[in-house]
Length: 119
Image 1 (cartoon, rainbow, N blue to C red):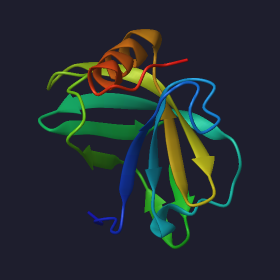
Image 2: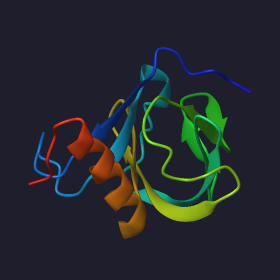
Image 3: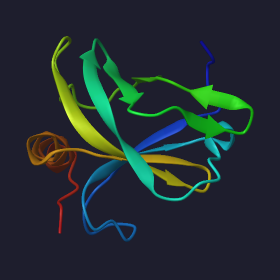
């Protein structure tokens, strides 16, 4: 297992920072993936975060990413053992994860509680 540090995890709320839909960004120089586009991934709930398993291996420099474990203080939108499918997109300096509507609703509810309203 490789720990990706530094690493920043953000919830980008629809209407802010040019976000067309609410999603999660994971930014790190280690995750500088050269290809464009993305792939689908399985998302699994774990305690204090979630696990991302792409349907294909992702090359990030000399790393081959088979799985990401995201530990965060955000909302527990998937309970441990629950799963979903999401889109894993590639961008300069990181990745973004687009979730299904029911998970987006949970993220947006959390953001509303923190005073950030989707637009």
